[in-house]
Length: 54
Image (cartoon, rainbow, N blue to C red; front, side):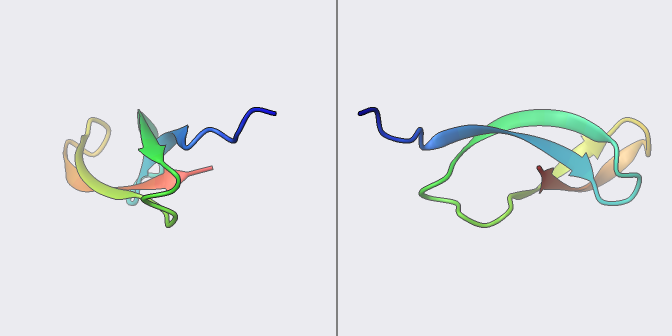
């Protein structure tokens, strides 16, 4: 039986405008909590925190 994949694809959404502008992978075993990265939001035209969305 195959084991569950540790790396999953996630979408990152801006905390201000809620637009999903980035997609990335994360390791479920190393980062069980929601990922938060500071990225550039083209809609807001500023650097904002982007949180992992389901």
